[in-house]
Length: 82
Picture 1: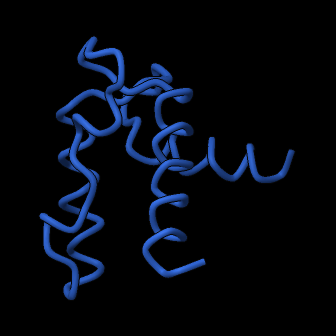
Picture 2: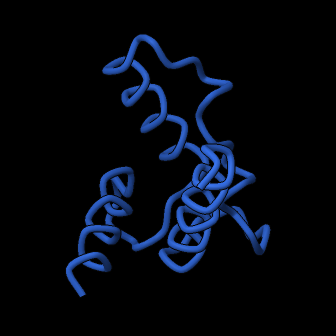
């Protein structure tokens, strides 16, 4: 349960207007701010908006966010040889 709350808290960070979904503009602002804190990362290294918006409705909801984060963890583990 704590992991779900942590994921939800992370999901809410870019949700500027508090509508429980992330618009493309909110996502882009978040990525820009995130990358400014990690100068070693390039924008190409960060997931794309389209990676998260699974249903293509123009918004990322928490379910889409959680699914994509789980996929990224699986891919990272696979790439690290686990």
